[in-house]
Length: 162
Image 1 (tube, helix red, strand yellow):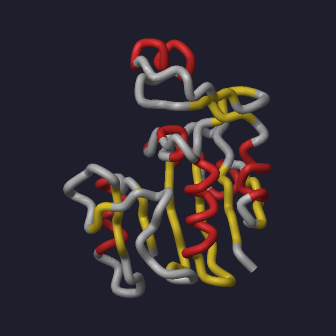
Image 2 (image 1 turned 90 degrees about the vertical axis):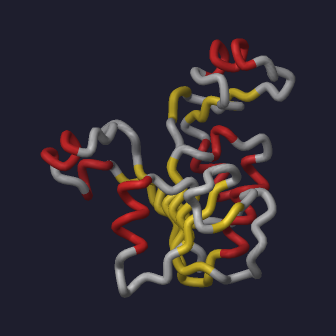
């Protein structure tokens, strides 16, 4: 399992599971097991059975290349959860906006490079994935949603490689 930009609470649980060969990766977090640029993943094709990447792609200049890299390193029959905040109908990005203040105005955060729209699923499909969009409430109980402060309006993008 590849866990990108590992959240401490998940990393602790996942790394302790005997049934998972776990690898955490981040471009700048020293707590991650390896340093990784997701637009140029240093592992061979078909390496990972599972990839989890939550709220990272909106920070990546070439998100489409990162999606293709995830597809490349995912095994046939493998699956990935690739979460982003969906804020618009159509994805908005402007690479000319480089000032952090202007990025915050345009994209909601100074380190974001785009606001994703409902067309995010098509980007994943274009990268090769089969995508199933799942409502959070279909897989997580209401008390867990509240406890973990999950945005129940955020769909889960469950991606497979056949």
